[in-house]
Amino acid sequence: MKNMDPPILILKTGEALAPVKARCGDFEDWIATGLGLPVSSLAVVSAHLGESLPSKSSISGVVVTGSPAMVTERPDWSEGAARWLAELVESDAMPVLGLCYGHQLIAHGLGGEVGPNPRGREMGTVEVTLPRDSENGERARLGPLFEPGGFPSHMSHVESVLRPPENARILGRTKLDPHTVLQFGPRQWGVQFHPEFDRDIMRGYVEARREILLDEGLSPDAMIAGAEETEAITRVLARFAELVAAL
Image (tube, rainbow, N blue to C red; front, side, top):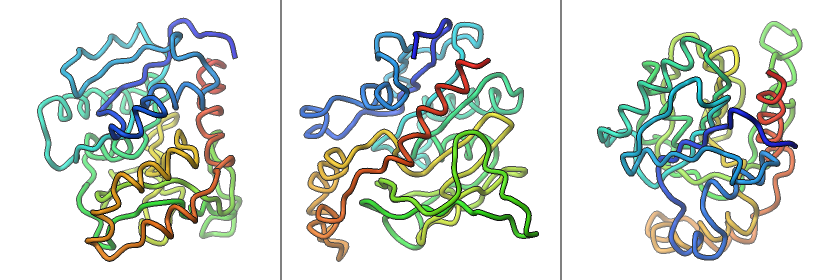
């Protein structure tokens, strides 16, 4: 895909875990690969380091990264980013896609509730289900980013969206999280999974969390063995880039 002008913004809310970053690069590198664009063609702003958010006219879309931070800690940089993202959604200014922390941050900014998942940590490659049909029997309206069915997806989170914002549509779920995929506006979505992860990155995250997982009674070895590639979910990023390019 050719470079975009204005560019897509990668809004960083943290950095990849140190041992994974040293070997595989950081969030913007993985997201750029998924978008099908060179990272040099993207605008990258590290909100967690206090960098200023750009003007709307200087970007064409936004991907919000994950983070080792917690939305419920509510640092000033995070609250400011939440308000900024809520304005983009409410005005339908451009396409927006939140990943993990980014998913929760958008929900929080729009008045939803984020907190520790009462079902516990969700880690490893797990199945996300996007319905084939809506409750009234009609074809489910999943929009341009998603396809119906059950797909493996990479997860690494403790907090979740406990209550979606008013008017948000629930598009997908897992066994531990009923709000895994949300549509916040006409062109704005959030996903609790990590479409930017590959199997190697997922395994690295599990290994980095090994002691924590063992303390919680979970099996990192089983998670590492069960990690797999997630082509169907990875395509969400490519489709997002296509959506932005078509504007």
